[in-house]
Image (cartoon, rainbow, N blue to C red; front, top):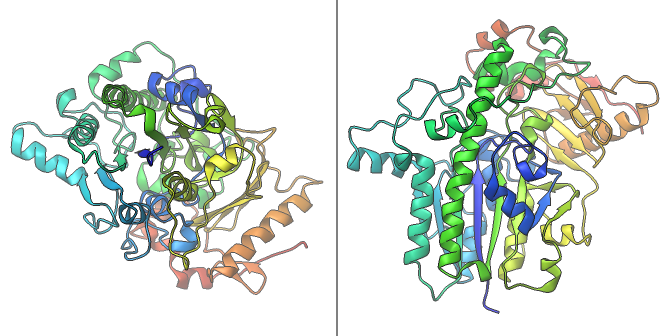
Length: 486
């Protein structure tokens, strides 16, 4: 068989629980449902640094954020290191990126032969539709109030991405296999679907936000976890009705992507490409959507860090992969797994001196490989061992421990429960070891270090900029929290 094609589809800020076929009976996702039924769904996939640029760097490099070192959206994307598109380009693949990539600088290709990015969409609109103004509703890029798109549906960014992707499929060099990376901006805020998709949810009741014994009221929540919400969107002020409206707009944005994917999948079929094309669907991170009084991302709670991940094999593929159709894999998966999976499919390999943190997802789905735990780092930290999840706040040092097997919505904090000390200390030590190995200032002399916890929204805003809490000087200036246990 010829080398397969790979279509890698990334959405932005899409939660794990937004696919109808995987249990959400409110949302409309017929084409993601089709991918789920035709392939394998990784039901415990996580972003190890749930923020746009670091997560996308992990996809490109096959390395966790703690390895590639990009932990925020403001640094320059490391250039020169081997990347998925770079390796596949060298292996003879035609490589194309369309839509949101979130590289810094934006036009750094990082191995892609050609890119058409979100900035090109705005150039296209200004040139061909100068009287149409996308996102002209006044809602900003992290605000969670609902809005409606201000251009016709055929001129939205979502439609443009799919249209350009279909153009590539129709005009590509058909003597070479291809990697097509499609990046949607949605459902990242502003939650501004076109009215056609907003109307689909008329009269449909939205799910209620989730609260736990540690988050019944805003005052109960350890304030260190509230920084992203206070700084980015203030969703903690929303009423239940307002949260429902935001959720409706969020779901409608996902449905808009899904319906446009129907056009893409149809064109793949018409061109005879489904027989030799792998389709991978993933999001860079999730969205809290009011759970535990929080909005946005960055934190390691399920809404923010747990992501959808689907892989659909070609129609003409090995019997071992056909057996995966309609299956689910509960192994701990991660964005770093995408690169080694794609390289394996393409029969390519990274340079010998490059170590990948990721695993081959298809081997994971077949039970051949697994990871014992997943560590997440950033402003906040996480250790997930497949059942228990330990959260540590970089501001304030608050510890939360959840048994996700029995408490998938993170409603009961076990960190101070009798009988859970061994689990707490075991996961805490795993985190410390990881941070110490990477030289992180939060680990020093057997102790986890944290910055001072903000006491209120006003105190967070008084810092003047959200990233100010994560400066190394601040991290080293606070009294350490002892690391206990074997």
